[in-house]
Image 1 (cartoon, rainbow, N blue to C red):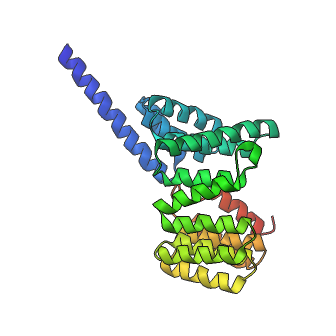
Image 2 (image 1 turned 60 degrees about the horizontal axis):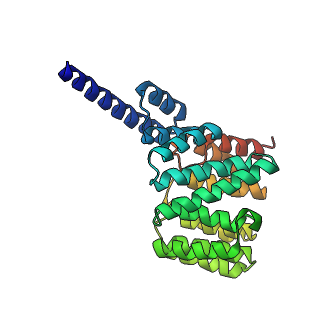
Image 3 (image 1 turned 60 degrees about the vertical axis):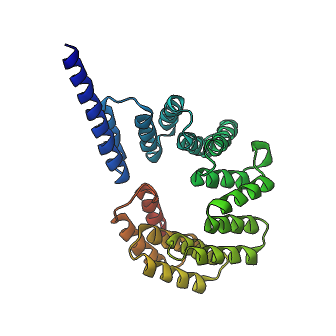
Length: 282
């Protein structure tokens, strides 16, 4: 009997692991509901399962459910920086969607979990970036502050020089030092010439400053570096829609985006559909 019990336990573990792997694959293909269905079928309740379920719910905009799963994951493995980081992200989204009183509470929790994620792992670059953004954008009574953001920017630069220059560009822009901000973005691009995101940062900033011809030239370079990359299509279309120019081209770019194979790092198709409606005058 003990042998049979051991075999049954082993098969259960294998089934759960296989289910988690299949759910991860579905998540990476942005099929979040199918990923959740596989997790439910597996019957697994480990920290990794809750972490993936939390990300599925987050991507679906189900932030309360995401909060519950991330809390369970962190409670099971309290030393995992990425669990605390995603919990902070989720509270940040809840703050954006809540009334003033709830928003303040959620924003405070977002900061606390971002800080905790960095404390757990100082090399977690995504957590550092989100903590930087919080400090830069949040008012002082919520724990934000320019000096705090500047200190985090220095830590970011130690881990990733190109990203450090991007952070410095945001600091300079906040102080209306526009030439310095542009210089920092160009230095970031020089340090990471094969990272298309660095080109998009500069292209969007030039457009923001009203330098459309220069912006389009950088967008062209980005398209040559990464032809048909969803992030390039979306960034250029978004820029055009925001500026209410080249709207026909923006619509074509968004249609191509909606036909692309997206990843969780790309904006959701719902956002592209809203932009397309806006570009069409809807």
